[in-house]
Length: 153
Ligand code: ATP
Image (cartoon, rainbow, N blue to C red; front, side, top):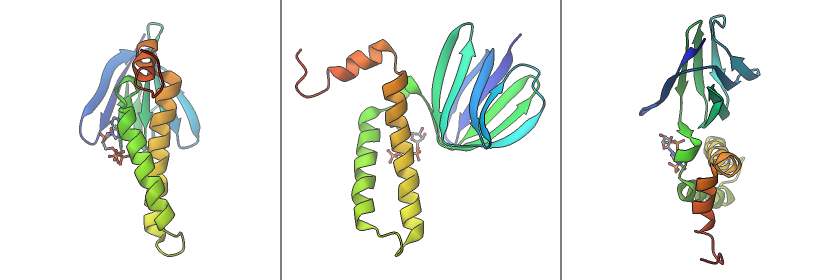
């Protein structure tokens, strides 16, 4: 028995398949959604979505959004979501560096909105980097290690 899983971000369909279980960062903590789950609507926190199908697990980052569960379908409307294999590490590193530099210039009391937006951007880039490091396939890790300075070729 399976449940349909659709992950949609603002600009694209990120994933759709019939799966065994979806584990999400719900508002009240990690939620596991199995087929025939009771209907529910929840906001999503920044974190990781795990989708299992036939013994294989696929990992996505999600920066927030909404989930709607019906007994036969889980619909995730994500602010942004990426399959771990799609994460552009260089882009996330650049984003983190840019944000850290801007945070040094922005003082919390002066412009709170700017500071909070920078904090959120820092959380997104840290999430992408952490998740890529923890969950990338062996091939992804080999590709990455060849890019590191001082690495023998
Ligand atoms: P950046 O400053 O690099 O744009 P951001 O955190 O502001 O990062 P978001 O607004 O969260 O980016 O996402 C915008 C779009 O870009 C989304 O579709 C998201 O999936 C994609 N995206 C952002 N960063 C990455 C990344 N490092 N690798 C792959 N896709 C990314």
